Image 1 (tube, rainbow, N blue to C red):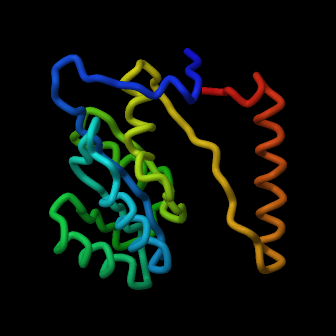
Image 2: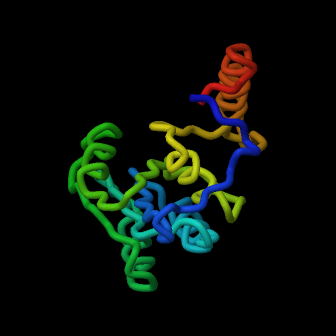
Image 3: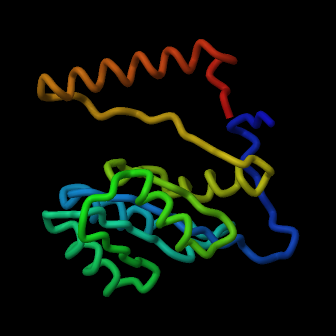
Length: 171
């Protein structure tokens, strides 16, 4: 099923907003995790409700766990799942999926920035409209270091490749 960006209108049949679990696997993300959680907590909630923000701390050796726990003190929806040893991304994602309890599950990377206050609503509405899996187009930050420039170029290559299939409408 293919939906266009302007088809983002959802009115719950039941009159109750669908609940969303936001799941974030993280390994040593002390530089990013606060900003990500804060942007999620600031999301618009007119048509969806963020029921929980689950962060899987995967063998973190920095202050990621401390930062997530501080966020959970401020907002009970933020919950921490701790793995004392690094188990890898797929193990973290599986643990998050087992723990999530909401109608809709959003699985996010821990190193992203969310600038659209309707991000969660847009993603959840696509699922509520019948899509099983939804992905977004990433906008990379301007690279500064040599390594960042390499990653930036690889992201551009991936983007061009995706756009070459079905005019980029690959949902």
